[in-house]
Length: 442
Image 1 (spheres, rainbow, N blue to C red):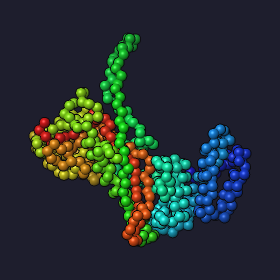
Image 2: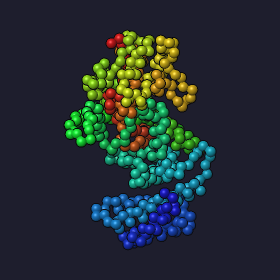
Image 3: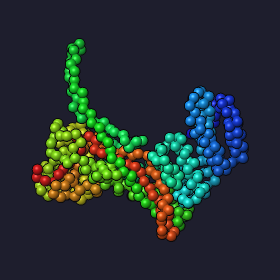
Image 4: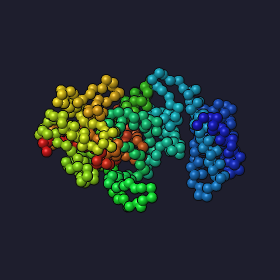
């Protein structure tokens, strides 16, 4: 919120706020006016912000909520926003940065970056904890998912940093990009899937309507685990003002989490990790009409240990219902792609179309191809290729935020190490939306 917008809200609610609690609001308004007149230091605005935030938390616990409560709440929240704006403006004015050391306008991000540079500093821990509480109050981050906070429970990675990390992970882990993604507050959440077996009918304008069959609904419960990684840096790196420590941290976390997630979404066994789409019930050749819900269908390659004929890929393509083909993709490893891209139809034409742009996927039979290096290699009875609408067929769930704790067990002198983790789940959703190619004759 801008300073002007905050001022307008405070002006509109000041009378009722003073009537509600004249002692508190007169005090904070007087403090703010003094800071405005003297161009107060960001630390002074932060102290004021903490005081108002604590008051807001107490006010939110009130049971008998009235219009006066609401006016006091709106006035105090606008004061927090006003402090945020003043901290951002004053911090930018006071800062001297090198070209590589960017400064964020988000106070939570700035406090997080400063803490990364000195994670054992009590002052920076306190500042980060304060900014995290404020971000939680504003709804930009979720509850921690456990009863521990601060140094014990770890800090939540700021929303802007977590969003940047998430976008990069999608680029590395294709199922993060292709599958349906949900943020949940409980790992017990179950998702309903319609098996598409409801009936319908046509009637005249005044004709009696006969009953139609109701759809059958199944539920899917993702299995969860905590994906984690250790990020390590030298103290010299952290103290170097020319290094953008926030960007360095993002890159380090991305590599740690993306690799672990990518493997789990494909073949995770569901024990303290997501259930990968290749780890559900044993795939069968039975069609959608009679196959058990939750079980994937496979098409044989026609050869015991190879993919030598493109016909099997065409069979796989048309085994998928037309409604899912509209948003379908191929998933395979680079090694498998090297084999498939050499296949040709009966007219000697390649069924693989190489993209002319790095930002556009290659296509196979007109549908995009994504590389997942965790997909099995071509071998007898393996499933090296998946085809389908992964947004309909596979479910990825995140519970809570990415959290980070300093690892105090580092024994290497001059190094700092962080323990980064996130609670992630996954499960097959609509088993009709994904088909597999099996290396076999039947």
